[in-house]
Image 1 (tube, rainbow, N blue to C red):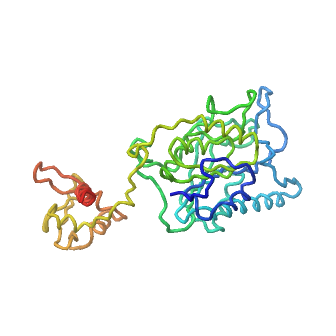
Image 2: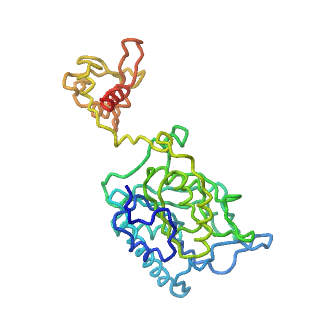
Image 3: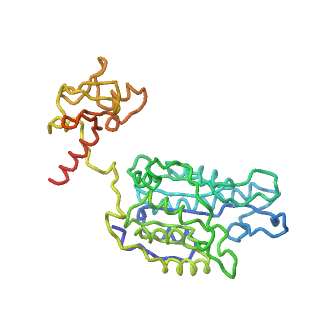
Length: 372
């Protein structure tokens, strides 16, 4: 349950470091941070047809930018970054994770500081923009991606990763670390008097993956640079609590209106809660022998049509070519690589004569335990 003293489902106007330092320690499950990128843009950008590019030149993205002393600008940005990362780490639960998005201007410095502060990096994910802004100067490659760093607060702690949900979201294939998604455009893009309300508004599709992958219904998702509220809007749709911190009064107003208009589908556990394999009861291979689902001396096959065979011993180990070990050890020896034996060993069904993966028997045992 969330800490009752948390300002749940609210936008707090103010500096994120000051606000976060007033929140309870170790109270947040997930953080998504889209900090200023320190683009250091000088001058204006123009298209070939002489129309001006609506680029990122906002006050919130300006630091001590001195062309004669670039180190001073980096030092100012690093101090800012370390302060908000430290504040985030304080409010994050031991089992919590954080996502930080950035470009080549800042993400490498952010990653270094995250490691210095004790975060353990789990993944870097590349958001490949299917409709990137063209390169109008023609002096380098078109910037067509941004990088997200996903890290846990404490190395080795159990964190949320809804692997199967992401696999289903990707048509049954493992979700890779390169995500092809379009920029925020059309009706989703908030505007004021026909102009972009926020220069770096993120698409909801991006936050959908982040929140679905690394949190559960009822969890608290915090965004220290809330902007126009994409994190809050998606969190509300997925029945997560959210907290937004934003300095700009206009963004606070726009985000509040946007999120108030979100009408999530009624909560149903079977719709929004996913089984996490790592949290389910552990079933040893020997349990299949104890329940008579397999028997000592029976043959297992490596793969549904595999010619490689192993014999089950009475203690639940397997024998293959004189080598004796667990279902995982023998499978790894055959494949010459780490291997999950539950997914690779097959038995012959006496009723149908068909070979079936032994993981089906494990699920039968697990279901029986849950029902008893």
